[in-house]
Image (cartoon, rainbow, N blue to C red; front, side):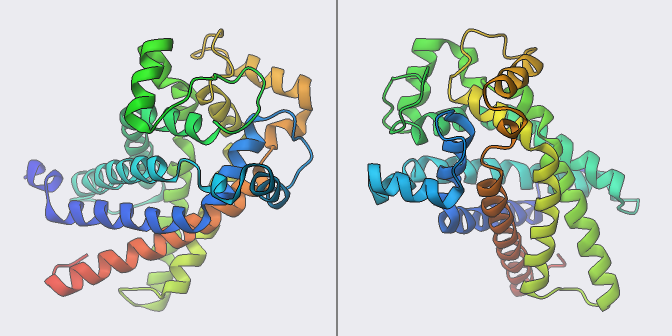
Length: 299
């Protein structure tokens, strides 16, 4: 039955494994995420590398500033990845019941799952962006102080209105193409390697490598929109129409920093997302495989 395919133990295991994998990966590489956010948002640090930005933050704000906002980010990421993996697994169970998987189907299912995830979890990521930037001296940044996710949600709603909690939603929906491309490349590489090895399970190193390759392709192709997304979430364009001004925001960045401004923080983003994605998928696959193996359930 379709309902049984959606509300199933298998989907729950995939969602928990995905959430756990993302938590391990994020905690390991969190300073790179902090550096990437600063590079994307702060126009005063145009020519720094990710490592020099990390050193500067640690020197001027203290080492623990590199982990500012870690707890709410982990909370949000767990919720986000749980939603994504659960919806994606459910859609696969429904759509692929009587048909073979393929690149176009993988892309479509991942895009739908990503859209649902964006609509549900964007408020959490808006608050997280604000929390990570509280120690930064950025022009036009909102000076409101937030004490965690719930406090941030309430204060943004109270001060800026309910729609501010969905700042950057439009570019986020466009950016659903990132995880969609990511999952499409990952699933097809995985199927190819499983077919070539004539095995039901790959090694940890294989999962790590294909996760890294898939994320590198997805991140590089969508990065300028990620810069816009970060700036909208930071509240730097509160007077503009967030739903139709992406082109204007791109022009604004180019005028201030040139074309390279659209790729500020790309080095940190590639390091962070490639390593995170590789570690996340390796952890996810091994946890899911272990649980299904112990329970005698086919993965």
